[in-house]
Image 1 (cartoon, helix red, strand yellow):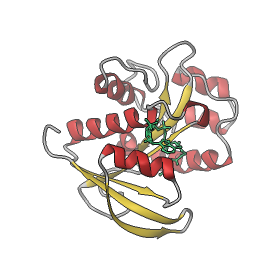
Image 2 (cartoon, helix red, strand yellow):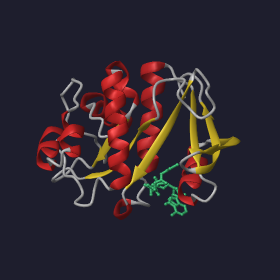
Image 3 (cartoon, helix red, strand yellow):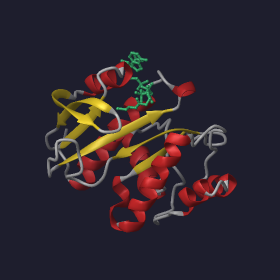
Image 4 (cartoon, helix red, strand yellow):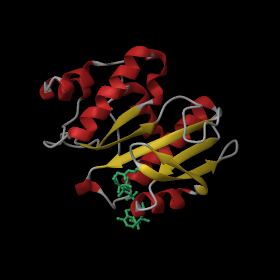
Length: 201
Ligand SMILES: CC(C)(COP(=O)(O)OP(=O)(O)OC[C@H]1O[C@@H](n2cnc3c(N)ncnc32)[C@H](O)[C@@H]1OP(=O)(O)O)[C@@H](O)C(=O)NCCC(=O)NCCS
């Protein structure tokens, strides 16, 4: 994340929900922006907060997400043209605009657990104090709606550990169907879920 593609993300959430509780990153900044992840990794947190117009949680990024940021930043630099297919900060649009999680895609169409050329894979995380309020549901629906509208994507994948009850429940609630499983070097066994939508869905 904080792959700070501010414009797409803001637009994404504002259009996805008429009365948005969620926004990501500053509106009206239609530009690619690697400043925030670089600042974060260099521990210049206030620079990252100013650039992204959000308040970071004190304990974020943790070691796991620092690794994740490094990985994404490398990808962004290698292929800036696919930045919109990475991850976004999820921000509450009130007060200090706290960042409450991150969500996005594993990459452009074709980068997904089942290697389907026409599918994208979604990923999401809501920080613990903000869970069970419907934020992940809202965010993932908005991502799907955006990818379908802007890029005509009709096939979505999610890979979820069989022990991850919250995420399994979320996927089912969104209409994903179990289609298979695989072994991930880092995350172990993962169940593969798919959502197919049709035009106008
Ligand atoms: C999975 C996760 C993103 C869900 O975020 P969330 O904002 O709490 O989800 P929502 O509030 O939109 O919940 C939607 C539904 O999912 C289900 N759900 C969510 N958390 C649940 C839990 N702890 N136990 C059982 N069901 C749960 C419920 O059906 C819930 O609806 P309800 O609260 O009205 O009953 C969050 O738990 C998380 O970040 N976990 C850690 C990271 C992670 O596992 N990411 C996914 C990797 S595949």
